[in-house]
Picture 1 (spheres, one colour):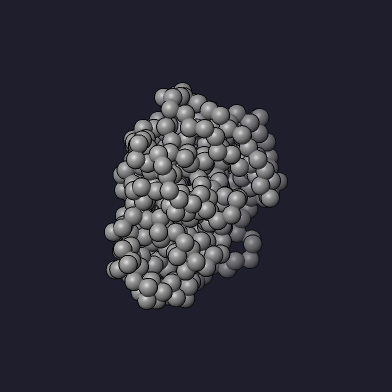
Picture 2: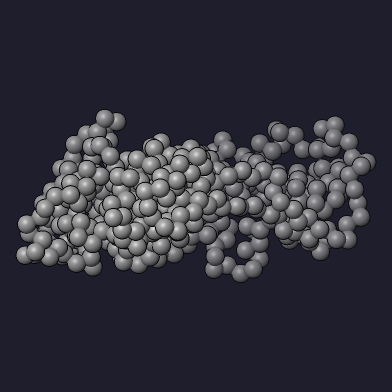
Length: 450
């Protein structure tokens, strides 16, 4: 497939990976989640082996790979793909699901088994010799099973558990997953929850719904959770409307997670940034040109921001920040457009006249009421807003102030409830470990305050 600069997808709905795209690698059924960008030089260390990611290029999302050792070292081998038949699809299933029928009639138990490390006749030297001879991981697992004196005495459940344990060690499997809102949020919440403000995937979906994010919306976003909120809004808009990330001061917040979504240049051009002071000054100032000229239409892609000329300055943390440049009305080009370009003056004028259609704030480190009091005037009347916070008290205080000053109606504080279940025959129960809370959301509708 063709590719664009910067790893942007030539086709946003592409089902096949391409060189330069971002992928989510699920190792051994969720034991380890890794984000990677595919390139000829990209590699990943799995266990004590380093494998090249080149075999993943051009494969469908959902493909399953297995680590094998050959003459040239460890490498990834395709085991099954989404287009495979049912026998291949069982590779990614829970081993218990494939043996439901056997488990019902299994009458053995493990009471007579003694774990004294004498049941296995195959030594470590024997396994190393098999590897030097080019034996695959599956062959090593079969040898371990045949040389175990207690394997046949175990229950079917214990046998499958033993196979899975050895498979993770001698034949690790890697699932190629597409990075989109749900998978990215779940991966970060599992591994680095503080980087996304402990925002759980069900809370994120509720946040978008309560803000009524839909096609051709102009959404004002305060994203202090790494960019997961900005990416989720842009993914739902699908290249229509605009996502305006605002921030107090002179330095924008980091939205690096947006780059993992593999957005096309068209969608990236719809993600802009500007300071809250610029929006508020445009809101309060008098524009002489408003009556004589109309700002560009929301559907004119590329007319609100500059996609060719960019100059950069350094922030306090050393990351480059684009400096606003002149508006270009040229047709969109095939060059890569980075998300988070500065909003053009014409775009700011448009939002001054119409107001934003939605407001979403996820700023755990900021005072909730000060953010609401500052940004609510930028929202058009009868438009919804939603504010996320990890704790309840800041939102409760903010809700009381909004009620007292009569700035909004339909105010409510919500907490989503998510509980995962294992669903298997005779073994259906909630997971033993789960998150206690995914945060809270204050939502409402802005009204005219006289």
